[in-house]
Picture 1 (cartoon, rainbow over the protein chains, first blue to last red):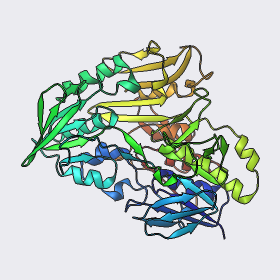
Picture 2: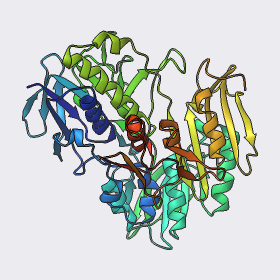
Picture 3: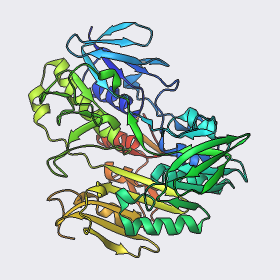
Picture 4: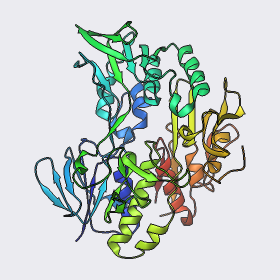
Amino acid sequence: MSRVLIAGAGMGALRTAEALRAHGYTDEIVVVGDERHPPYNRPPLSKEALASKPAFEQLAFRHKASVEDVVWRLGESVTSADLAAHTAVLGDGEVLEWDALVAATGVRARVLPIPGGDTVMRHVVRTLDDALELRWLLTEGSRVVILGAGFIGCEVAATATQLGCTVTCVALDPLPMIRPLGPEFAAEMLRRQVGHGVEFRLGVSVAAMTERGETVDLELSDGSVVTADVIVEAVGSVCAVGWLDGNGLQLRDGVLVDSALRPLVDGVPVDGVAVVGDIARFPNPRFGSDSWRVEHWSLPTDTGRRAGAVLGARLAGVGYDEVLDSPFEPLPAFWSDQFDIRLQSYGMPGLADPDGIRLLEGDIATECVVGYHRGDELMGVVGIGMLRVVNGYRDKVGIGRGEMQ
Amino acid sequence: MALKVVVDMDVCQDHGQCVFAAPEVFALNDDGKLVVLIDEPDESQRTAVEDAADVCPVQAISIEG
């Protein structure tokens, strides 16, 4: 009896387990994850689930019959692993041996070091428990200060505004969501957010926080002060990869892997180990010769299926070389809901040249599709509305995929 | 038991990702609304509809049978 150990119990873990079964692996699968919930869908946590009452039952992923015998060890975590000895240590000291290991530990919400910032009024939105805690504080009239103006920050800003909160968004960036969207699109999103009542304090950081009874004063780097009843921090993520220390892996930005998702030690892949989801920094020839880590919703499924195919073939001893040679060029996709706005993106718009962002369809003030080009190549598209038109560009994203736009 | 596709239309937000996975079973109409073309697709569509259920951002698709 062999064992696959999956560290992390999110969507990537579930998809990997399903793919292992689909590729003929019938022995033991053990999933260890620190959250108390089995895998659930996270995007609604800043959107519709936060607007209503977040409930696990509505967010849970259905489990296919093939993974009913998977052992879920929830509320536990893998604290270290020895890739040469094929062992892993859990929080309570228990040592688990494995024949294949899947690293699916994902990311944590980043928390800024701020003087005076040790207050219970600071919140993040990464887990269902985070959302449950935050939901009851987003009451009509409460003053919500959001740190960060990326997608999560802007989605929470919209949700909290719709719940009747007074929302101020504080960010170091000059415009919301500017890094993926570019300045013109970001300026349009700012206009729309402001039109719905969100206040923005851009180009500033938080210098200090001072708790005053039930509220917190945030002193900004321009000297101004904003008072909050609730603070929501949405300033990016930190990869949960510390448990892989000591194995010679490249852990600077996630885990550097090859196209079979095997981690690299001095450029040599480690067989029998796969990295999936948010922490996998993998080569994607669709966009060039680099390796990228992508936190979009579509990636745990893409990488989980890949890992299941690779490990399934290796454990069976059948067709491994063929799987390794098969191309892996997933197309990242994400969406965002903010007020009445639906954004849909395919590809990696952030890879565009500064002057490579062009309107492809429609009108940016209403509905549109914007193309993100590097040279003549379409690296990504983002649409406001116009879903069928945006979807029509999906297969044209990537090097050598589309006609000139 | 025959394959049966059920979409919870109260949950569906017309993302249309299922259309890429199973174009013979799902489509977006001219108004951008999701329509199920075949409720009980042929067994040959099983992988495609299971894929469609996986990639639905709001997990509105369930497969029976």
